[in-house]
Amino acid sequence: MSTPTHEISQAPQPPAAIETVGVTKRFGTRTALDGVDLRVPLGSAFGFLGPNGAGKTTLIRMLLGLTPASAGSMRVLGRPVPADRAAALERVGAIVEDPRFHPHLSGRENLRIVAALRGADAAARIVPALERVGLSQRADEKVKRYSLGMRQRLGVARCLLADPQLLILDEPTNGLDPGGIQEFREMIRAMVEQEGRTVFISSHLLDEVEKICDAAAIVDRGKVITQGPIAELAGGGSRHELIIGVDDPDRAIELLGRLEQVREAHRSDEGLRVTLAGGPESAAILNAQLVSAGFAVTRLEPVRHSLEQRFLEITSRLDASSEEVPA
Ligand SMILES: Nc1ncnc2c1ncn2[C@@H]1O[C@H](COP(=O)(O)OP(=O)(O)OP(=O)(O)O)[C@@H](O)[C@H]1O
Ligand SMILES: [Mg+2]
Image (cartoon, rainbow, N blue to C red; front, side):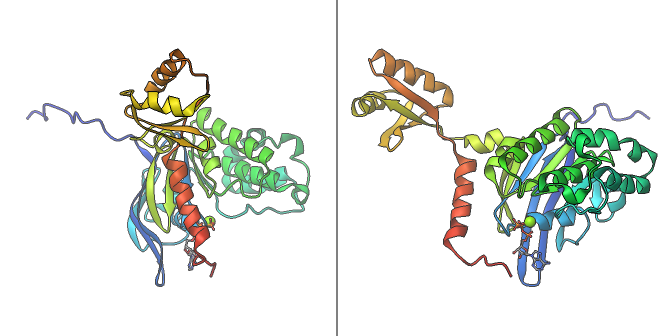
């Protein structure tokens, strides 16, 4: 008997670090998450972006098997959760709330306690983990003298003792100052790019997610509104707009209106706002046309879309209505 003559020719989906299908969570009559389909590619930094109360922590708690889903299914590193929770979480490191430590012990001693429960491999990772999070110099000070940022980093070091393939961090930069956020960002990028780990970060800060992450999902009131690579979410896909600064805007609008690359142009506070008929590459043509017609072009930049706008819409709606009062 011969075996089938051809293998599956379809390109298989690359394996995902996290995969959820139809995940729903109800607390009594409140639906905290509603049919969430999420796919977090392996080897990326993925942002789970949403305003307060969107359901970010709830999803993370379910992924970690800390609370059951009301409906739907989840896989973490390919294994079903909660059915196969122990195996799924073997190579997952997570920080859900503020990481807690023994305050009267040093950072290193805190890690030793954790490593003792995990075995020799974990103990051997203490020094590199402290190094990775930039705490080597301060590792022997008592944790009660640590700043918030240092405690966050010690939390990540503790995760690294398990050599996690996947890190799940719930609002890891909360309370950090801009310098602390930047250090944190560099640390995450290094873990993804140099060590090949996957990092899943929840956040309510668009800017942070854009800077740290390769891909993101926007969640609002329990629903995932959009997800994908940051460049695609931010680029807005279909519509490309430019802001153009010129010395004679009215005359420039006339000229631009005649170009086939321009769908529409009008004056705005920032300059001329131009919607392109095609892709962003035609910006160069517009520039050349303006310059050869004798205009002084002082500014020409793409308008950022989609991600920012959508997120602003979501957050401004929340500001406008006061219904989302904490229980
Ligand atoms: N144990 C619970 N009992 C009842 N409702 C809950 C419980 N936990 C969360 N919720 C509700 O579920 C919704 C989502 O909460 P969640 O904590 O997941 O939001 P979040 O996106 O993490 O918000 P934040 O940015 O404030 O941390 C909220 O409406 C919250 O009040
Ligand atoms: Mg939360």
